[in-house]
Length: 134
Image (cartoon, rainbow, N blue to C red; front, side, top):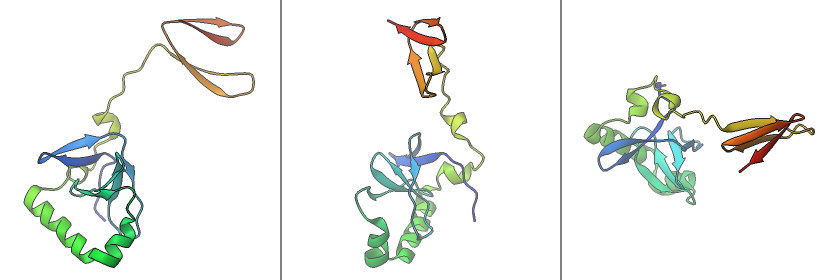
């Protein structure tokens, strides 16, 4: 099995674009599929497959055929190249999408153990309770 990074890429205007909020789309055909913006993409090529409301397993198995899909994936890789997801397998999300720490976020637990976070420029701590002041 070929090693790949945990960063997903879509093909946009003949270039690859890293996308942050993509999630693996499970399938029983051995394809690297992911879901981004209610659309299913193929991981090796970054190519859009179909909308999230489509039963892609059924469509490929009964209409198109898995071999035809795998052949088309290889053709796209030959024509346009493979996704950086596979050409840079050691790449990490935190390297591509650095998140700046917000100094104004405070995390706390209330007396019942429920977690809370507060954002704002002014906060006061009173008897282990955090109050938010706008």
